[in-house]
Figure 1 (spheres, each protein chain N blue to C red):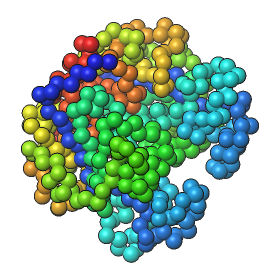
Figure 2: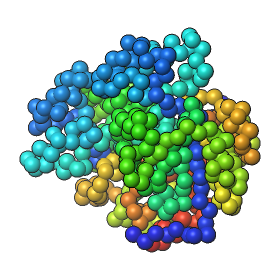
Figure 3: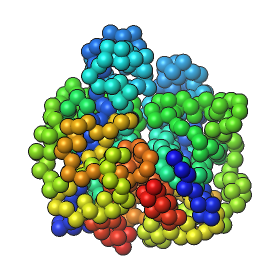
Figure 4: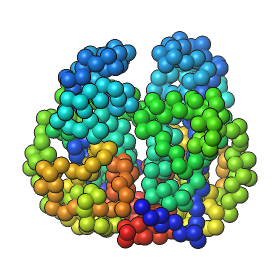
Length: 247
Length: 247
């Protein structure tokens, strides 16, 4: 298949931020629900990814001890998984016009090699993320397909050096997603932030990094829906959809 | 939140067809991999959904006995799950302009109530589908959110009575997805078929039902990507995106 990359077209950098993806916090590693879950998966409780679908009772303890992150915003690896499946599989990524990062609530940043083929099954995906936390990169040797580092969002922005940081949030100015994508496509190096959490808004520290904040629907959309749609609109804004179908 | 449903706008009927969603076939229910998997989930081997991520070895036996469906097209509940999350969560469904069906390789049809909130976790989703196969509907009493019936695709088309059946396939006529959606939005009752299998093409019996077949990219797209994009384009074709952002 001929690549249709347009050298002069903009590359989109997409970051899923404050994502609800973390290992089980030490405070609840001894909880029976976590211990049993870890045992069933033949891992230690400190090696497993927190998942509300399996650790609901244990997470209630986090609420009682006033854990630093509100537990109802934690433990949703499915948000990261679904969003990545939606943005890494389409043409924009095949044509090498996309850079993707996952920033987590605990200030880790996962850098994603556009060549990665993620597992489609969520249990396999969670296993891969656990391997990533344990090893720092996957695969362990050679060119990393996934890499994780302790890194704050300001540090990530400093590394990406975008022309402008756009954010999608219910607190932003109303604008059609398609127009936001058009705008992003006209920038030299746009960075777009989408929240990787199930409810609530960007933290103040995230807000401070955003140059322009947009609300694209009167109701909150799931991260994987808005990210998938944005990638699609962005393909149009750089003319990729039009070029591909002519092949 | 005010509903923005336009009574005169078209409702889209979307069917994911020949989907790789089935219970473990009787031929491999005694396979050690299946037995161990079922035991771990505290179910009987005949009650569990086939999943390539867990039953790969057992599925090789299906190939050796020349099972009626090629095993490399079977056992992918994640395709159905990801696609449903991508089409049921967006505005088109909230605004009641979408009817969704899942047709399976074994000729079952799942009818989806637009009000359903599916589990985001894939293990929970598979559990729900197993409950659905066992009970025929979920919940067991009252208005069904999911209903499953033995039904062929021609029977489903006879029930939906569409003005036209459109299909998305690599064997179709090249057209921009956006133009296909525009075309569908102008029909009175369009039915759109998307393949719910990992590789290959529609079966001949499916092809015969299709009035117009379109290829929307030179490379095969995942069902959840193309379905999500089509729903988005369809929202535009009936003016929903434009109306919503003005709220």
